[in-house]
Image (tube, rainbow, N blue to C red; front, top):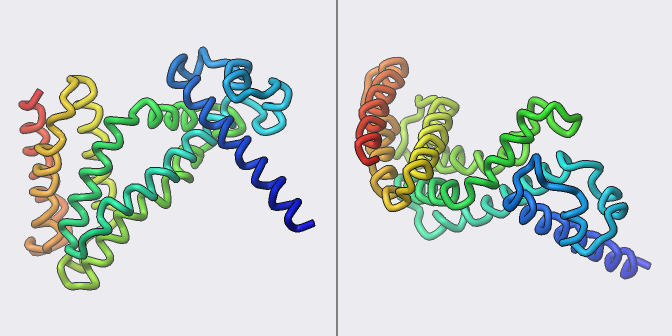
Length: 229
C-alpha cells in the first residue's frame, strides 16, 4: 500500500512538473496576458479540465512557475560559493551568480512582478516574496559566517546590506538588458564589491556614518556604470 501511495505521489509530482515546464514555455513565448490555459494544457499533454484540477487559474500557475525557478536557482547559488571559505570571495561569487542569473532569466523574474501586482486571490502582499525568502537568506548566511570569523564587522545593518546588495544587482541587470551589454557583468561586480568591502570591514566610526558613506560610494559606482552604456 505504501509503495502504491509513493508511486501515485511520484506520478502527481511528475505531472505537476510537466505543467510547470509547459506553463513556463507558454508564458515566455506569449506573455502572461496572452497566455491561455488551453495552450499550457496542450503542451503538458493534458485535458484542459485536468489542468484546472491542479491550478485554478493562470495566477496560480505563475506562482508555481516562479516558485520553481527560485527553488532551482537557490540550489545553484549555494554551489556558486561552496568551493571557498573566504567570506569576501563567497560574497563576490554570490553577486556574480545573482547578476548573471537575472540577466539570463529576466523574463521569468518579471513573471514574479506580474504576480506581485496582481489583484487575484493568488497574489497578495507576500505573494512575490515568499518563494524568494530562502534565496535571499543565502546573503545573510554569508554575512553571518563572515561575522563569526571576525572578517565582517558585527555592527553592520544586515537588512540595509541585503537591500543594497540585491537592489544594486537588480538595477544593474535592468541596465545590462536594456543596453544589451552582458559582458559588463564583471565590471559591475567589481564596483559593487568596492562599495561593500569597507562597509563590511567596519572602517567608519558609526553605523549612520557607515550607511551614509556606503550610499555615497554606491552613487559614484552607479555613475561609473552609467558610463559603461
